[in-house]
Length: 297
Length: 307
Image 1 (cartoon, rainbow over the protein chains, first blue to last red):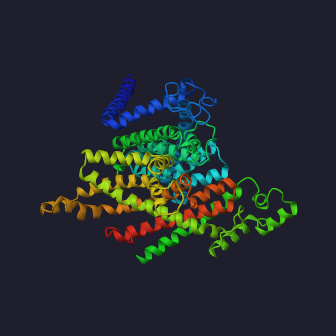
Image 2 (image 1 turned 45 degrees about the vertical axis):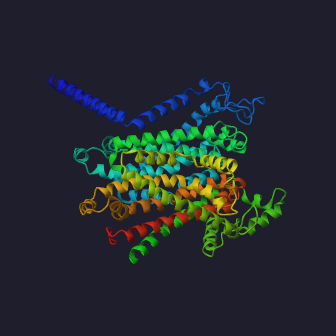
Image 3 (image 1 turned 90 degrees about the vertical axis):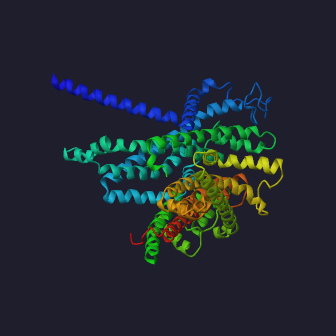
């Protein structure tokens, strides 16, 4: 009976700790005014991405040859493109495409990079050397160039853009997590777990991994911005989404021929890309100031 | 110092070797037969066989790689499938154009990045700092292709100050280099600010102020000089960003440089050219990083070469 009471007390204490950590984070987060509002913008973007097809006032694929290249008006808030398609509807539906490409690619890069970084840092030796030398080779290719090369090999298309952006994210995550793992490996609680006979996999995932999460979250949010830029650049170059797709980069690529006569076709999708990347960068900066201030410099 | 340079030079050999190997084999994984492309749609089976032998593509992959490396060392990058011209001839003018664009972008980005970063650090948490850092984070978030199109619309189409593209005069490089350098400028401004803020906390700065030196002298002669090392490193590391960005910028401004050649070659599936451009960009990136590393160590007395 006593033991049960003790266990429930321990779990209450840890619940209390978790709650106080959350409230501490929330208090600090509210003080980061720019990041706070950028966070709201990201939530808004995510909602638009999820509910895009319901929210779009027009069919984003349906041409209307009576409404070609119309400037913003009450009927078409962001104007129409060269096929008379409503630009706002295309941006709304395109949010789903652009954000899912960016999130998926960074997520894949983060998962693979984190596993490699944890193993590299924890086991050391030949495995560490192999993973780090492979990262060196990957770092020998400039990011966007590596993505272009991968898409050139695999062929144009959004799936290949995801692969390309994920591949160039892997070494950065691996390096970051390896550094954190090396530091955490020497901690007393890891030593304690090891002396109690815990298996390596348990030590890595139960004890070391949580120590790397804050840096990873910060880097993840900053990387989303880079990934949106890279994916839209690839679409702009004709290597990503199909030209008729409402992908933001592809919209800019198609619209550039009408820059002279209908600049809104280029300006509005470009502004949306800019604001989205800006929001992710601001949130990343804010998170870093709270969760990982030592990496600020 | 000499030993360090030799050690680093030897260190990059395996990386260059693996990079060349990767590029070679990945390009050969591309679906489709490049020989059919080179021989043309109407080519007969005999013609295809002849072209395959001419290009050396009938040999095993390992032999092809060895021949490729042997040719590389003699400066022979192969021939374009599209034009039939030696690739090194195609690079001649294009490389110069891209290099000019890259250095102009890096030049203005370095100057303005240092100025904005310094002003932000000196006026920390005041409105110039806020404005400087807002400019910096906006610059990092700007899509290059969008900025380029805006600049064309405003400064070429509306005001007629600069050409919309091409490489006819120095004026043709102004808008593309602004576009390409914006991201780097922003990063440099942020790094200069944080590096300078760290240095301004140092004891020798306090000593300088206590001696009665003017604040401008303290910042310019003591703090800025000591904050430069990380900034120079970042400038070098961002060289890769410029190489990648040049592909986009050259497309927007129709500049016949290396980036544009890469995109055109991908569209035509001219793989020998794609392979050569990517290899050259990667080598350039590796060498610039090495140079920055050596310069950093040579300029910074705090770093020992034997460590």
